[in-house]
Structure formats: structure tokens, C-alpha cells
Length: 418
Image 1 (cartoon, helix red, strand yellow):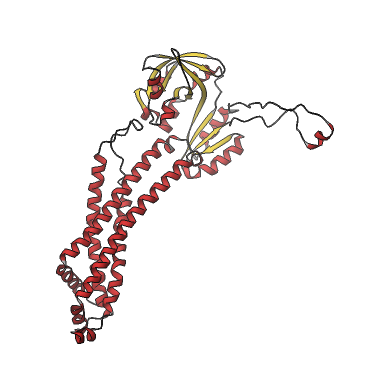
Image 2: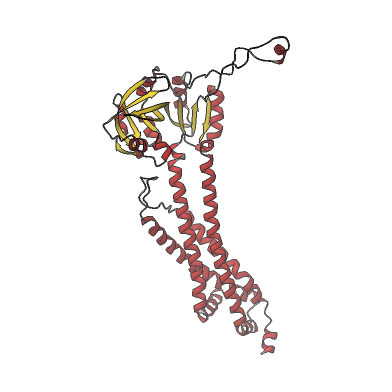
């Protein structure tokens, strides 16, 4: 089998039907380009949302869930009920949000080789007061250094600096909260806790995450200020946030820490279950649409090669009559489909990259995502590799059936029919 000769014959046949060949190649180019641009955009959007949620969420969170104490004054077992009368409506008692022995837990976690770092936090439900306006919300008392290291809080600060929280009695509030209460950096906001404690804090910054319910109700202050606001000692911690080197182990690690430290835990997969589901669905849709486009392009190649066989019956008969085997003829037509697929795939890579650049340059302005200026695009080489190889695979398969049909042509019947 002389592959060079077979390739020359294939190129000659392509040249004889140049217009149809170009149409087939353009179909593959369009399919690959749309696949790359669509998947790149959808992956970029998923990564953006992942940054807003999953990456800002601890891999494992230690806390005390609000629930009544498990040790009630009297156990109402059936044995006692038979012989005694009890006063019902026993009121539940909150065991408290504070994590017992939090300092020791933090020290142990910092020594764990699986843990990147730990960020303690105090959360408190409060009322924000300005003039006659009262808005319910949350104060997050954070360790500024740890919180910045693990969650990049400064990325959401549109006015001021997160380091300004080191000042006594300072606070950073959400933009939605600032707009509703007509507050700006440098103003003073009054805060009332659920215990009735009252404090006045200076606004040293404005944050905007882009998620309305957070920007309308959430604020940040230092750990010490939050503890003082609640009237609690320096060891009062309500949440311990953990980042792991391998976040895929978060589920198992959360279970381990729950039993080890006798606290409630939640892993990032559980906390972001709805987002993860949406991310998977968007990925499936984008890949499905791209694959369908490539399959449609494959059908176009199949039709063109099929028509070429009918038109080139005489040429095929002559080839077989002059000594070319059925296998040679088969490889000629498979070469046709591979050449079309290769040309279309390379063109698709180029145009897919150009389309991605165009999308990446389009302005994207929305109050929900204030830090994003253009549409997000992910330029992963994996997308280009998938588009290229799937295009070759589709076009090769599309050329198989016509090639097999051409290899079975009987030159005697063709010449006799003429």
C-alpha cells in the first residue's frame, strides 16, 4: 500500500469537488468554533460563580448548631409515665453558640498537616440603627489576617481597606446596607445586639460581594470588637473556618472533626450543593450543544462523500481494474474525510479562539457583579484539545460508511453497465 499515492488520489478527488469540500470543512470549522467558544464561556462563568461562592466558603466549618439541650431535666420514658404525672411543655434551652475550648481546637488544627490555615469568627445577629431606620442583619467578627489569607476579603472592598478593622470600634458594612441607611465611609452606625447591648461603630469601609441578601445585611468587624459588642471574653468563638490542601477530602475530614471535637460541622460540598448542581447542569448543556454541532457537521461530510462515490463510480472502477484493492479504495475515502476534518478542526481552533477573544472583550456591567468588567472566558487548552480530537473522530466515522461502500464496488459491473 503506497500511502503517498493514495493521498495524492484523495487530494485530486477533493479538488474535483472543491466547492463541496469547502462547504464540508466550513461546517466542521463552525462546529468546532462554536463548541470552543460556548464551553470556554460557560466554564469561565462557572469559575466566576465558583469564586463568589465555593472559594469564599471554608472547606470545613466548625460551629454549634442552634438546637435545644439534649439533657432535659426529666427523661419522659414509658416506665415513668405509667406511675407518675408530669408537667409538660418543657422549654428548650439553647446550649449556646460558643465553641468550647476553641483556643485549643484552633492550635490543634493549625498543627494538622492537611490544614492550610484556620480563621476563627464570631457571628452575631444585630439591629443596625441610623436615624429612625432599623435593619436586621449580621456582624461577622473576623481575624483580619487569617480571613484575608484564606478568603481574600479585600477583593470585595470597594471603599477603604480591610486592614482598617484593626482600629478599635470600626466596621465595614455592605453596600446595600449603606445605600438603604444613607451611610458612607467615615460615618458612625449604631448597633443593637439581641442581648440589648448598644454600640456605636465607625464605618471604615464599604463591601460589595454582588449577592444582594449579603450586601443588604452583612458587615465585618474585628474579632475583639465583636466579642466586646456581645459582652463576651476573648475566648468566645462561634465559628472555626478551615481551608484544606485537598478540598476533595472535606466530607471525610468534617466527619472526623465532628467526632473529635464534639461540635457540628459542615463541608463546602454540602454548603454549596445547589450551586454545584447548577454548575454540572450548565456544563452538560454546553458540552451537549457543542457535540451536537460536531455531529451535524459529520453528517454533512457523510452526505458529500456519499455523493462523491456515486459520481466517481467510473474512477473507482478504473482504480480497481488497474490493481488497486478494495482496502486501497477504502483508505482513499477515509483520507478524504480526515483531510476535511483536519482542515475544519484547525480552522475551528483559530475561529474559536477569536470568538472567545471577542466575547472576553465585551463589556459586562451589572450591579450583581460589580467587580466583573467583561464576560468571563476560560482559555483552557483542554477545550481546544477536545474540540480538535472530537472533530477528527466525528469526520473519520462519517467517512467510514462511504469508504466501505466504495471498497465493495465491482469494476466489472460498472464497466459493463457503461
